[in-house]
Length: 238
Image (cartoon, rainbow, N blue to C red; front, side, top):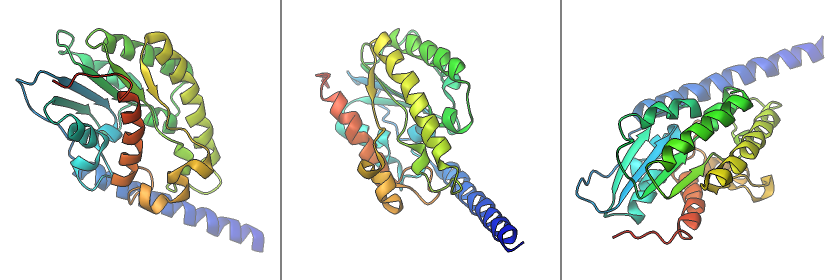
């Protein structure tokens, strides 16, 4: 009986703890404003699309999101941000409606996190990603794809379940990498071992208050990996 009481107490605590952080994340999402640069006469055009990580949910301000850091490096470019909170990869397909007659010098696609959390079927995810990348390659010669780091490092999730999210993160990574290679798309690998992962080593710094979305420092860490790939593309910023 004492062990049962201890287990029930722990389970109730984990339940309400997770509910609290989910509520914090919802509040952050309601306040988040996507970063964009409206410059219709620019000679260099960037499209960034995806989920809440494209919106910049969790960052202290839009400038401290991946899109914001990208805009700082490409200050003279037009940056179109089509990030929407909660989007799964399948939802990106409709995001290309109305822009298939346009051209972008660079497309950054950030997706997969919600597919991990909401248990999207792996075969369906692979088909959706292939469709998304086909649409992207129709309107740009330079496409960069990233998913997310180890979701299992997020302290939002109850203790004892985090291995599930690490397992699914690795599975999604294993889906994304070969499809990106087959489509001629550059993949940014954010998966690291725990001892080399700053999100695992210092979650208070790299995660926002909901311990699920990155903070400004977390987005900067991700963007440094993006920039390392961009530097290999010899992009002409005009």
